[in-house]
Amino acid sequence: MAAKAGAEQETAAGPALLRSVTVVFDRLRSQAVRRLSWGIADQAISSLTNFAVGIFVIHALGAVQFGAFSLAYVTYGFVLNASRGLATDPLVVRFTGTDLPTWRRAVASCTGTATVVGLGGGAVALAAAAALSGTAGAAFLALGLTLPGLLLQDSWRFAFFALGRGSQAFLNDVIWAVVLLPALLILRMTHHADVFWFVFVWGAAAAVGAAIGPWQAGVMPKPADIWSWVSQHRDLGWRYLAEGITSSGANQMRAYGIGLILGLATLGSVQASATLFGPMSILFLGISLVIIPEAARVLKRMPRRLPLFCMLVSGGLSVAGLVWGIILLVALPRGFGNWLLGPIWRPTYPLVLPQMLFVVGWGANTGYAAGLHALGASRRSLRTAIFASAVYAFLALVGAATGGASGTVYGSAVAGWISLLYGWWQLRAAMRESDVYPSPAPSDP
View 1: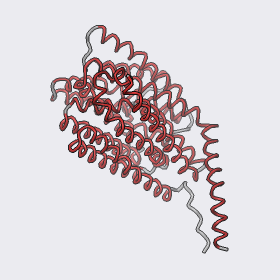
View 2: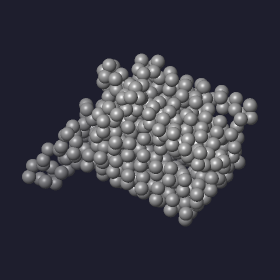
View 3: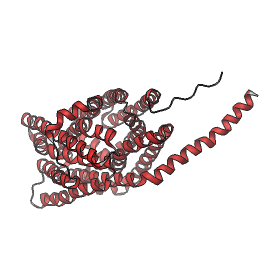
């Protein structure tokens, strides 16, 4: 009898899982496709502007100056993650789907906080520029001058997605691109093609979008509200700040370490291999703009479906990264590499396979991260970020010291897969602790 009951349960498990998958897909199709589409479209514009700058620097200035540009860019990522942790992450978690007056009050404080973080980060970048020399100093000088505009523009994007108006975020990024691309061409035509002007024009174009954001939203940033905003959301904000700083700090440590151990030219090749996966960055970051709000909606309406939702996200993004990596492995030796990267494509090509493994792991990590943020499990999210960052920085630098450029990328990929196991374990624990996620009923003795 026990065997028969077990067989019946096993037989029922398949249809139950199929129904769960169908329910989640129905929800995605009926309510979320439009929001996800705007997220991907918006991130496509944002990433393409950054991609255009990177390709211009590679072709115009070569690997060394691209390495200097990369140092400034990862520093921008560090400050950006700090801004998101304090400003936009609490906004997305707590003010997604709220009424318009509540959203406007929150956005005024959120964007004001992002502006203040940009001013502080810009001051530090200017101090670094004064201490450095050559191309690295020039890149940090331009970054320091433009960081406030860059961070304010980014905060508008998250504000619009929290309201469910991804089209407004897309429009703001289109404005950035429309200003940036002609400016890059003017730099080439007027022979001002150096790393300072490339970084400055990139940041100044973002500042145009930042200035138009208040008109789109009907909200003016309130920098004076930073302390009240941070205090009100200190249970989330400080942990998300630490999480963002930890993650981007590991990227900085890796970049600086590669530059010191292997030189700026090798750093340029490593960053170029990441640039080849730009379409995947567009997809992943575009999904990230909306996946936390979507996970929060799933949690409120179908809490038992949250793990399945996260697994579908992880699986889909991992497959996408694998397919793109295979395309690159086939296409680069057939002329695409030289057309895209110029003379540095040959030292970059051996890095494509390990970079593909890293990107596939990145996609797999996206699902549990969205689930932890939707649950508001900031403690567990921070623990996961600290663990992942420590493993990532350690294995990347060990790989650089022992295996050169390929070693550091393989080390990064291995770190991503180790972090995947730990992250899903943390999500499972967070769901058991959550008040909104129902505990399973005890089984009969």
